[in-house]
Structure formats: C-alpha cells, structure tokens
Amino acid sequence: MSRVFVDTTAVLALLNPDDVQHSAARDAFKRLSSTSATLVTTSFVLVELYALLGRRMGMEAVQRFRQTFTPLLDVVWVDRELHEAGLDLLIDRDERQLSLVDAVSFIIIRSRKLDGAFACDRHFREAGFDTVP
Image (cartoon, rainbow, N blue to C red; front, side):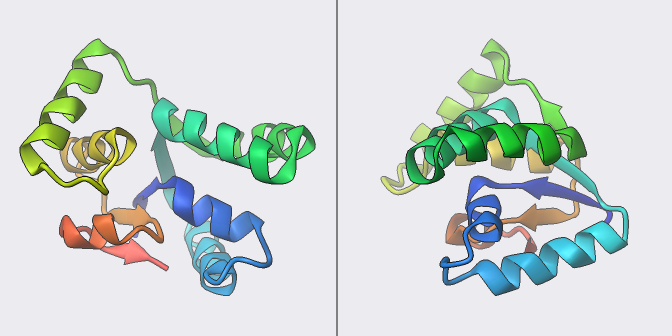
C-alpha cells in the first residue's frame, strides 16, 4: 500500500503495549514505514486521538505524539462541506456504532482513492476497505 489512511484505533494499538492489537499494529507500521507509504488522516482523527491519548496516557503522550508522529501525517483539515458530507453518510448508514469521525474517514479514503487503512476498527473492513493490520 502506498497511500494509507491512518485511523485512531491503529495508532492507539501501536502506542499501547498492553493493547491486544499492539504487535500486529507495530508490525504493520514497520511495513508501511519501510515502503515509505504516504500516511493520510483527518483533523477529526487527530482530535479523537489527542483526547484519548490525554485521558489514557497523559499530556506527555499527547506532546510526544504531536512532535514525533503527527509530522509523518498528511492531514486533511475537515471543513464544513466535508463535515456535512460525513454527517449525511452517517445518517444514510443508520448504524449506531459508526461515528462521524469514521464516516468522514470513509469519504476521504474514497475521494482520494487511498489504497487502504491502517485501522483496527471493523467498520473499515465492513465498508470494503483493505486494512492493515
């Protein structure tokens, strides 16, 4: 995969050695790094990540992530149009477990023709995207 969407679930698994998906996420990230894959995410994913990292691991983890990992990402900043398109998709899918963050992510993957997603969230597979791990 040369252009891959990065989801919150995979990053959390990568950063938390106690996560069930940690080893798989670490191995997948090494593969992505070794192939110089372009890593794409959204500002919504970053907001979600910063909140969860802060809550689970503290502000030092947020700062380390911001300094070391965020520069590796091509960030798509969610504007009103993208937000509304994600909300439309969320309402159309009518699935309680799907989040607005994921709906916007799906739109980005499709519109930018990304090769897949670095994600541990089943919703990405269910939406038909190739995922790693």
